[in-house]
Amino acid sequence: MTEINPFDKAHELARSIKQCRAFKHYLAAKQAIDQHPDYKDKILKVRARQMEVNRAHILGEELPAELLSELSQELAALNQYPEIAEFFAAETHFINMFHDIQNIINGALDAELKD
Image 1 (cartoon, rainbow, N blue to C red):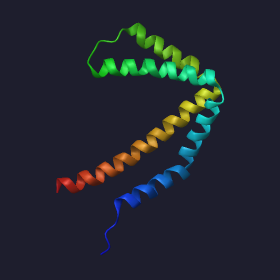
Image 2 (image 1 turned 60 degrees about the vertical axis):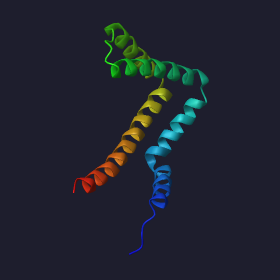
Image 3 (image 1 turned 90 degrees about the horizontal axis):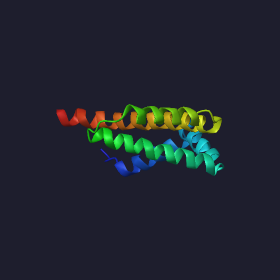
Image 4 (image 1 turned 180 degrees about the vertical axis):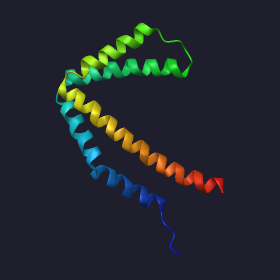
């Protein structure tokens, strides 16, 4: 039996991901955002605030309701721009697909390790 090289399969998976609709849609949406530096700046600012909230949550810090409300309002305002809304939707779809792939790999390995 020939041993399968996991690195070859990883490269094959990467090529497959780059050819899938979810990645192409995400890439196109990102390129559209890159054409609007002001949109990119708005997204980066709200992402920085999201990271602050996530960090505080992970550390068990109490988050002021006002901060969460402001962040929610900022995201809602950004979603009024069609290009930004499309970018967020494409990004979410791609991240979900990538997460599903990771779960498939982890599940297969976990099943083997439990035996």
